[in-house]
Length: 528
Image 1: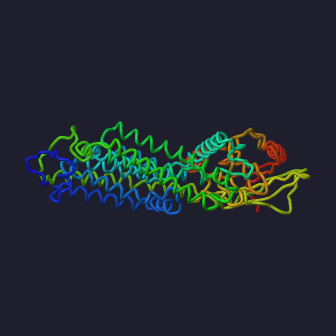
Image 2 (image 1 turned 90 degrees about the vertical axis):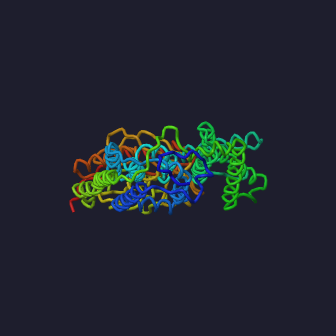
Image 3 (image 1 turned 90 degrees about the horizontal axis):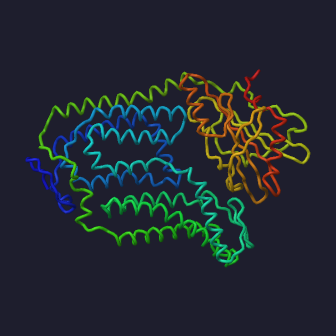
């Protein structure tokens, strides 16, 4: 289907768009080359963020779908090629302030070392660049594929804890309805045949993200109606959450009925994925019942009523204007990594000048042995301090990680991540108040469980003299210091105590220890 020089907009649907005669005018080709060139320059300047993004896709099974986002994006664009060929891309310099704002967002994320903010800003910059070089009509035609690109960014970890809680709640209520005696304590289900803990891997976050990604693609291809698309996407969110609860219930039930001979160990993971695949196929099968006719579905690539037909002319002056806009956009965005490097250099200091050891008074004394298997799994610290203390039969383990202003420091990590996840698993978390160095501060409380003990852990940050349990606050304090050119030395503090029956036992031990401890002494300049 060739584009006529008379400027008529093709109205045919899928059948016409799939013919080999579809030809894009010269101005399209020039702007696409300009866009690709701009992308290569920007990706090169932000290469550190790009490699961080790809590394997360590779190392995390939860976000491995990121490798499919770009191919699926290109496929979705290909489906809309007929409509795109009928449009005239017009560079829009008014979007340059948007690019500048997104570059500032990346800068703040970089100074605060918040990877998700940097990655989100970079993907948004690439989307905004299309808007700047090709115009509003093209963005409107590609609004879904462009929005889909955001799934390249690893996000959703904050949903893990709520999903764990829901799965545990669903499973215990389903078991109760099945007349199976069960007790739920935090995220641990206790049955006569054994205990089951709803760990992070059982939260269903992988099922949920995979279902949403597949659901969005499915809805965009099968339906044209916004209402039907929305309903199917909502179903793609709700179904895997409920299905994961059913999966957990089914595995525990099967194990209970077979006296732990079936659905334990690796089996329950395999059964889980098979169950998810069956649920996803069933969801797609039900969705096909409301599939719209080809004439309706063709709308995803046919002309939009708001698009205006334009004559096909090879306007060299518009290409030059696009080149000027592209250069301005690349310069505005490209200066950001250089500004970040300057600010990092100005604020750089060393944590090696600090003590990293607190003052602890009697009756608490250093113990001969220490245990760090429960401590946060952070890494990259300039200094680490680990020590166990005893007062009679009571024992507290202390872990400090001190960080300078070097880039790549993993100050803020997952509270539930421990040095030995095979030994310890998180069963609950909350916030409590504690008195530290005479100040009342909030601490993050995590309950850990192993085959040998139950442990209560308090975690918080120290940044520039301020204690906080809020990761966002810690990042804000670091970012503020670096913007002002001041050192942003920080530390992670974790205290752990075992308890026999109730977590309150551990709380009492930790409060008494802190009343005899000066943590601020760990952050004073060293006399050595």
